[in-house]
Image 1: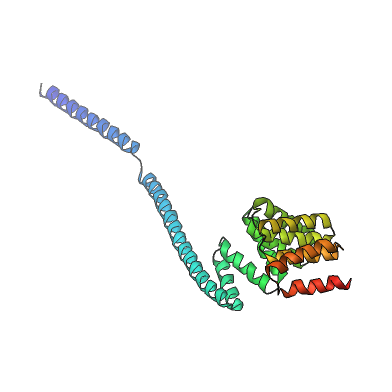
Image 2 (image 1 turned 135 degrees about the vertical axis):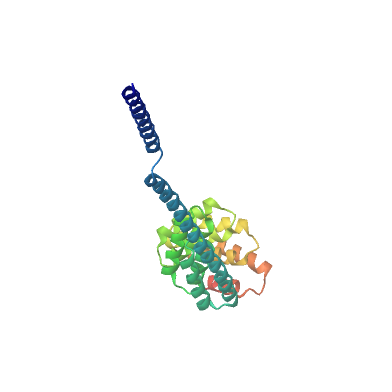
Length: 253
C-alpha cells in the first residue's frame, strides 16, 4: 500500500513538472512574437535619418538666407555708386550681387545698363539676353537688348527685339524711334517713316524726334517735308541750333 502511494505521489510530481514545462514554452513563443531589439533599432535609425535630413535642410535654408540678405545690401551700395556716376565700383558690386543671387534681375538689369553706358555692347548683349531668357516678355529688357544689338550692327536681331518690345508695350515713343533707326539702316524707308511718325504722335512736344525725322527725310530727298518738320521745331524753339543748321544744309541743295 505504501508503495502504491509513493508511485502516485511521483506521478503527480511528474505531471506538475510537465505542465510547468508547457507553460514556459508557451511564454517563450509569446516573447518571440514581440518585435526584437534589432527591429526597434531599425525604426530608431530611420527616425534618426529623417531628423538628420531635416536638420541638413534647415542648415541649408540658414545658409541661403544670409546670401540673399548680403546680395540686397550690396545692391543698395551699388545703386549709390551708380547714382554718383562711379560705374566701375557699381559694376564690381553688381557682379558680386549676381554671384550671390542669380535670380536678382534688377542687379542684372543695372549691370547691363552700365555696359551700355561704357559702350561695352557685347557684354550688354550677353546680360540682356540672359534676362530675356529668364524673364520672358519684358519690354524693357527687350528694348535694351535691341540697343546692344543695334550698336553692334546686328540689325536683324535688333529689329526682332524692338518689335517684340513694342508689341508688349506700345506706349513708349523712344522704342519707335529706335525701331525707325533700325529700318533706316536696313533701307526700309517706308517702315522707318511709319515708326518716326508713330513716335511723334505719342510725344509731339519732343523736338529731338522731329529733328530725327527731318534728318531722315533729308536723306530720302523729301526736302519740302523735311522743311515742314524743321519749321515745327523752330516755331517752338526759334534758336534751336540743330534745326537752323539743317535748314542751311537744305538751302545748299
